[in-house]
Length: 276
Image (cartoon, rainbow, N blue to C red; front, side):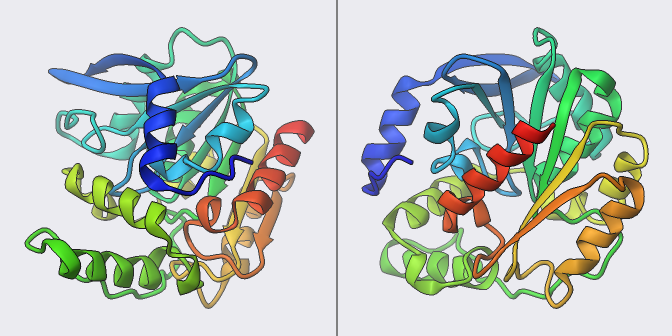
């Protein structure tokens, strides 16, 4: 795993190394970033996020794979989708952007997991494997979190609000909220225009998994605030639809498990991809 932790260095380097391309998104564009060569692995980030959610995973997988990380519609650098902005409608936009691929592995985090399920439902055998990471949309009660509004804040007050929100929702151990996490949170917040938490509620993922046929994996942080107090219920809901489910709960990690416990996450995802 890449050990660089200074935020501008690792983010600037990944951005510089990326191959950027655009695809249609209504009247605008959807932005994709790619690294490496080999079998395609598509990452879909979480709500109010961008490809930066995968900053500690891209270097690991780009050693042997073509890593493709989206900025989902209305988030990051991508334009807002046309209405209706439901997950199935936006999945069609993603499918257009991935039309040049033969088969690919798909991994989605939180809101991106809902989008990944809907994409797998329409892409059929083109999706070699599907991995859901800490997602809602299963029709289950969600843990309650209170977040601080940040858009009107600047300077130390804004950083303090980001730190509080990361601790409440994203990262279980406050000691792991480092300058890189704060930089990513700030950039993502400034570029977020889609109300993804509202869109991803309900049973969108459960309904999509009832149709999708790709081998299914799940990775959760065992201390994921959105799934507590019953992470096992998430596993059971997915296993009811896909008995072959391979599920990993990573001890001590919160919702943003791919960042907080990157080594364990990378190993778990690599094992799922190998088994698919």
